[in-house]
Length: 315
Length: 315
Image (cartoon, rainbow over all chains, first blue to last red; front, side, top):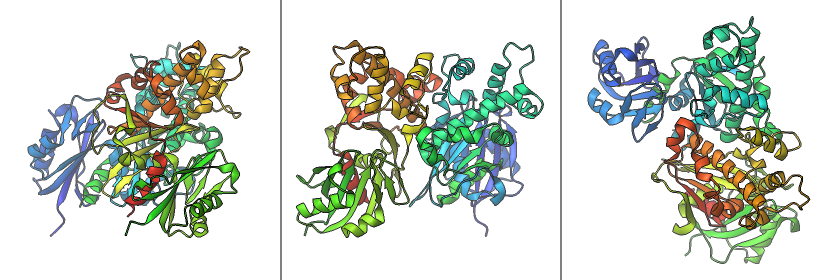
């Protein structure tokens, strides 16, 4: 008799990916992607998936979402869905349901990734058992520390994308004012995200008649366009400065892991655009940052794997 | 037969306090203070203390220091002492020795403080079992999150005082340049510390012929001196902004606890100087900060109590 299956999902602002898992591993061929706009909510979406899979017996569910989770209720930052653990458990007739924010799920994935999934960005010794830190750059920005404790992995939630954008000169102040939201507050996420890279590019090209570029276009044009290159350089500097601040805050001597679509896409540009220097530029405490290795996680299904890993660790 | 005693110490840049503890409680009357300059190192200082106490039988030691600890070795940020767990264990013939940074010790103290030791600064609900955060402002600045896990309290180390000073306007940039170290890097600690308050006051009064004021003088003069009041207002705004950033980073819905001599001394000035507004000024994520209570810890021996609490929890 095989181990009971679990249901895992990764709910973004636009799409939701769903899979079945056996222990910490995704069942091959079980990953499906759905457009959120085609469904009235997560429960009907998951019910449709389970019906298509032949209504397998399930031991539980774990779902990751891009937004804060409190007291078993999650709110998506960019979609009008409220998710409730108790309601989902009843609607899907599951023994238990856990909601994680997507960065917590990425943290729970680290021990279950393929050996070649972590691409080195900054080389440094990795200290086994030391804290690790996952930093996500995609639709938004966030982080989650990963602590090994006597009771297994502990991966607390953060909202690290909403702290003050750290700028340190007059040009930076101008950029901060340009990218700030309607309330005038410039947060880390206003630069370090897909829309953030687009805003930085719009700032670099302000006054030009050229149409606004998407993040994907800016990254694709880096070799040929001085403006795209300038935007990527500002982005890489800010990513270095912010991850350096998070490095001092969490001391992840077990490694700092960049995840998310934007992080993966900009990775080849980080070193040539000055990321490493910006990461370590912290005055007399720079030496601590020389001992923190940085990787990019190339596995696009890591949040699903993390949900499976979380459930598997709960026994 | 009474429980075995343990040896606890709190090593600052100038003084070291030492006590005996029985379980998580300090033995009444056992606290002594020593000037570091009068001793060749921590081991001879502690040996002198133990001799004066009549060489009691000890079950172990836990010592807190103002500086980073790695691989059982601690370095004081402002004193030329290197502390090594193994060496201290041998020199003092103790079964085991643990070094913590002083903020970790403050975190381990939270569950053992007297009920009136935590004075409310910002009222909000305190969620039992949720993460807590200790923020220390004294000779330096640092923080430590306090997580309740299935394996007891988990209190990881940080170096949160060395991240970029978050400034958001031209006046802030000027101040940052003024308080920055010789390397030009302006860290949080360059404002949020005793010497930081003095530097902010020197910036406010730049051009004046008045002699430089100590932090204690600036705080004492707040009612009468517009310059002292201006310096405290800048300090309170920065403390609000930085603790707000740490609030979003650690989500301490179990409370944020200010500790350290400078935090205690400025507490009466925080609310009138705009601390609460600065704490919550994070654009659309301000609402999360409305759910974080802030306290000041009035217990000056909390680091010693935390060392005792740590040892007691290890069983």
